[in-house]
Image 1: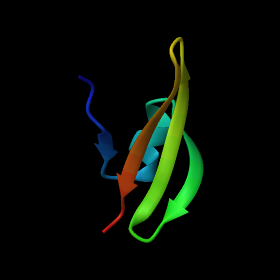
Image 2: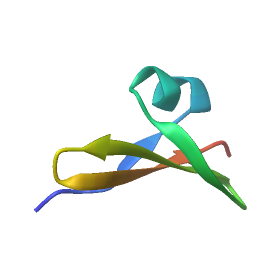
Image 3: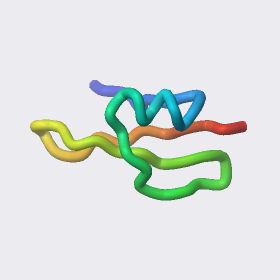
Image 4: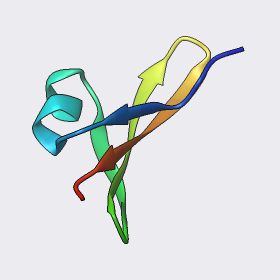
Length: 46
């Protein structure tokens, strides 16, 4: 079972190939396209 990736900075997520999808109260929701579909991750800025 896959887990949810959590980045500590937006720069880290962007470097990993993710793009900003939405803003959350604590940071951002980011996504990247995979062969199986979209993969979501969180960026925690607090």
